[in-house]
Image (tube, rainbow over all chains, first blue to last red; front, side):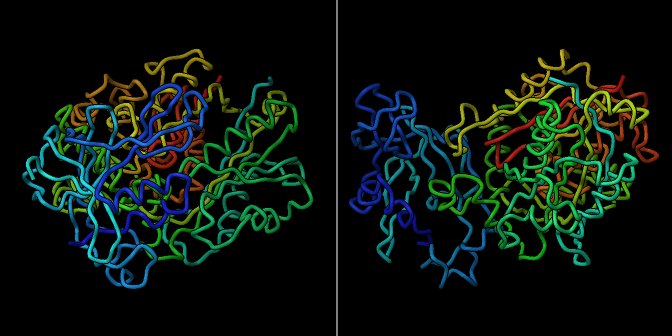
Length: 148
Length: 386
């Protein structure tokens, strides 16, 4: 499948465990030990109470599709003629839907939607965020149809 | 704090300006604004420069190029930045410099050279104004972000692709009348609707232009403004709002809360409401952005922006003429220049000096709305003449 690397930048942060989680097949969020706020994308620091005592939680289940698009004019690093050498690369870009789902705990997750044709996508439909390891060993997030 | 008035306005022609460098474009605009004010640069005490991107020019401190080329050394100058809202940040900073009493006469120069790198590279750099860490890795671009906003707006409020295209038709109609505009041509609804898809549902004509250009304004303290200009344009309200770096984290993807907040501040400060605005320029980087701006600025109820353009109520003669300079869509969007050009356009309208066919008659109160990124920053300014 044709996805982009997700974990390259995250590995050099205080939330690098997120990238390791994706490689293990789980999507991780953080929870503030002090005020209980849940953060996805994960934050190492809580802006609500300024605490840095966070714990990791796994995101499970499905969410509702908030919006989606298919990008036909890609950024330079995703363009076909650069994709072999660019830093985020490894795979040739082909337009695939991308969307945002809202989980039951309020977390919003962006991901590729490779398994559903654009014309079958509907805002409000249920999709399940899944970690996916690409053939080149890099990981990304996919929003999969329910039951898959 | 003191009242601050615009006493000079100037702009370079926007477009693919492979005939001029960043500093030469800045000179065109600065010279025009000083000629308009009727003063030499020697009289100006400070310069605020807005250039949004180092990445497009591969040079740090672009303000130094501008200051040197204008012969302003060794007087004070600095640069401000807020992506596509950089120009309004500079206007705000210029206002602060004069209002605080630090200087009586300030020039604000905004400029950008965007066409020296490929469209793919511009797409990349602008896309990374969004959350480069958590959203850009999904191939997110600026059109991509606004496509997500558009799709959600269409689902929630029934806004149609035709209504989006109607914004482009209007802005091209007025841009054709603006000698400084990048793309001076009318387009038909058919042409807009049949252009290729950039990021579904946004098509080519839903997207603004990638332009080179510069704009400048001269700001003066109240006493000086009265003696320099027959009709100073007072900046009577300023608002600046911010929002999440990730689009995914927004309270409501169909609303730019930064705009709502900036508008509230600006209206409060000026002591007016949206109904009092005679003419507005809003940030139409994409057609959906103009429709959302109608709503978020209070020109109509939330969700009714599509209807507002469909009923032509934002044309001259309608309730509230919007982007009658062509907007970012047709006038062009050299990102660092845009906010300054917006202030210059409103000043021109309030002075009654806009080009034939696009002057709003007897306009007394104007508004500019300038967005940075996909809503991380928004600046709203209110302008008035006595």
